[in-house]
Image (cartoon, rainbow, N blue to C red; front, side):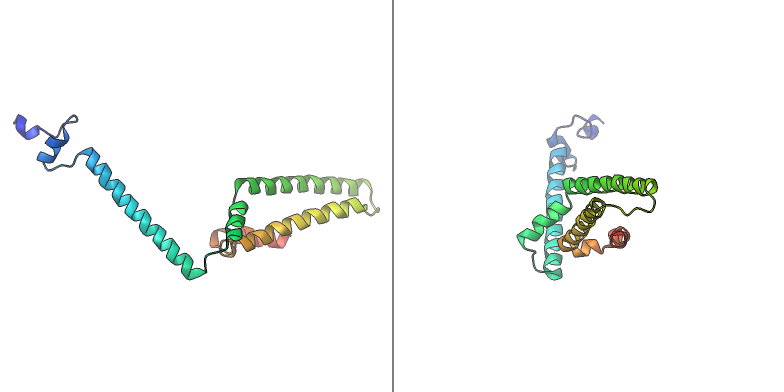
Length: 150
């Protein structure tokens, strides 16, 4: 009876596990890693194939642009621009309510034009960086909203 249970315990040796038809933890892990590496290689090959079919490999500048556009730093920059634009619009509305009938000064027009140019540049950069991502189902609503607002 004791010999039948050998190799099934927690502290069983790899030799005892093999004797009972079971693989050791080390060999199962090794097999898993090999299978995972094969799956990743297949996935990368599929991505390369799809990429080559969709378009020629993009030039280096376009890859760098994509990296910049989809970076956290760029997202924070645009967030800061949106936030400061909201503050500026609030200040402009407050000024117009306190000075009814007066036309806003040139500084309002210049600052408003700068924000419009900044947001238009961001929109064009996103389109140039990855036009398919711009039109993707998950991003389409926000991107169309951006186009309408700008």
